Image (cartoon, rainbow, N blue to C red):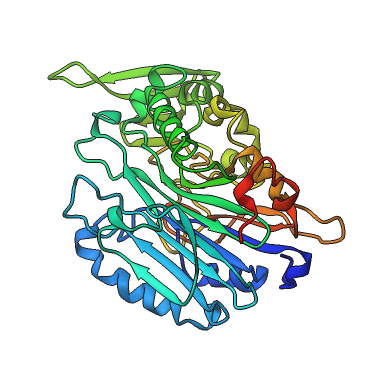
Length: 399
């Protein structure tokens, strides 16, 4: 990458999670990727029934914008059919190919062969029967606490002259209650996400198709280990338990300093996480708390990630004047991630003579981008990278 479009030096790739806006366009202009992939979750927003009508016009404007004019081919997949509760995931996958990138193909999962990518296409109806992708919604029994979940994944497969790879858009289950998440370590929600992610990895590496390198990115909803991080943040505080009068269930937990006039350090409720000093999540990008980010460790042999050097990506204030402020709803965490298989990691190169050719960061650090900060990975696939691994990944050499 590094602003260059010389395919002889490799193919520039940019992977982005979540929001698409003006800062996204600035990021594209800065890195000038050959291949750009954007994975969105909650297409249409939380009130999708009222907002979905605006999505199509937004996509048309994006495809015709000045920032994207050099991208002569595009594929956009939008799961907009919210009336189909059995299948609706609210996922959106956008793929843009620069005019300088020749001979790119996309896999047809029905015909089991690659097809040349020509022109720009948008698909939003019956994604279940669209041959160029696989889409699944997680079974309801994966998250019985939620009456209707939109969580699931979309998978596409792409072939460049040198290699091929899967791109998986994913949205895993959230923490429904801070109080439940606090009860034990690891939390019950962590186990639910582990089950769902394991299902996805098994699905994309099963025997139906030849295995290829894969990148999985989106909203994993990974959280810090609540019990351990709270015990650390409130190590010198005393805890007060407040229960409801009718059911005697725990309604809130209040942690107070033992002295200093019993100042409240943390107040915890089902949807409240009010900590006295938010700076702890921002100082040095909050990396002192990464020791409590443990959910990925279960998949250490299957998934890899570049070093995190940005603050927790969720939950940011949606007040346009509070771009760096977290909401007091959840403990800040790195929910939005870009992960890869071992073979995909082998494809990612970092030329010694090119600064910032490999970059894993967020977008809009100081600007309101919604409750999630988009995360991106910019890298170059070195020419011939897949051919060197041809025996290991046979379909990386595509005719």
